[in-house]
Image (tube, rainbow, N blue to C red):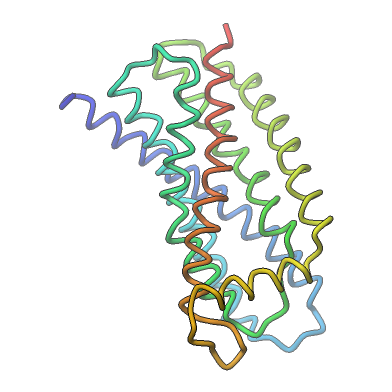
Length: 236
């Protein structure tokens, strides 16, 4: 097991770098969409933009590193004999890696009196950005197993599953509606803490809500990435 530690560390590092790139892409496109939708609003863009950019990159790095580390750690313990093993490993890694980003995102940005970003951007866009992480990890995973990379097949698999999952998430978010989603989040945050802020929300409640929501979203992203890796292992 000792000789596997450097391999797990390398996997975490590669996943973190790939996740940071995916986070940067998410931050850029979702940020531009937010600016376009709220160009008329008088917001401190010079502060909000760099803060959101740093948050997106760091969150992506944490999520990518934890998912890659989870898969590599399970391989180190159980080997690569179970084809579906990357799925639960990535789900656990994704849930753990999204705890802090969820708490900071909901507890920090969510407590500001700024326009709501919207359900599709919050829930569907990360899946699309995760296609970069899934593609890279699938290619690297095949290399770790001593097999041909099959880059095109891995990318095609990642994109196909990403758009299916993102489409389902966006459909649910649109059906619920931003107003209902926002009201539900506020109600949950108040239920989690009895100390409201000046905006009527609970700072600690929002952080707790972010922990729960981050873990749930991270697990879904882990399910997606793990499915792509597992599928890539089944390719000849």
